[in-house]
Image 1: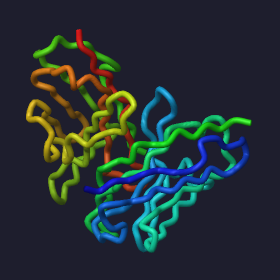
Image 2: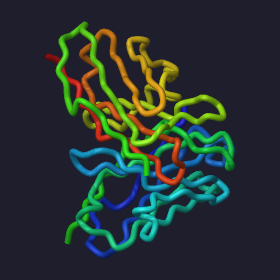
Image 3: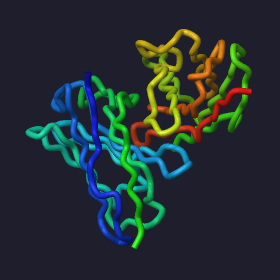
Length: 125
Length: 114
């Protein structure tokens, strides 16, 4: 059974870079059928897709965050990572990683399943 | 960008009664080449991550009870819980995957017991 687990600091200072890692277990991140995505949810609010990455490094990013986001993949560790620069209080959220079904690198990514449990990141001095 | 809206914001339904949630996209998510609607539904219980319920607007994910059903096409979609159970208390989100430039979710609909 595939499982995803987010890890990283729970507190980040304004203007600094938020860094999170998602570790995939029970399956290979190098599967040709999936992208791997990051989604966030501010406390009490809805879901916002941040970006997704294929094991080869191909990426999709949310245009509103693209200038501040970098998603990378480490197939040797079965992990993918998120970096979000120049954070503000508006970036405070629960950050989820999830598998993003695509069937191939050229195919249109579809739904997210399964999701990690999420990790709360608070931006505060 | 495809903007997703949902209605109502919240609803309270008696146990065993029907719950109906609506989702509307700002443009059609029906892909003409395969006649599929690029829309999914998720359930999020308090303190938990979202769980996939339905994809292609009406295909139930494996293991999801058959009291959950999805319908609609183009820009208007519905998630129906035919007989509400206590464990269905949650927030429900729709998501479009028609636009690969930006995958977007609806704002969510909270379902409670009356």
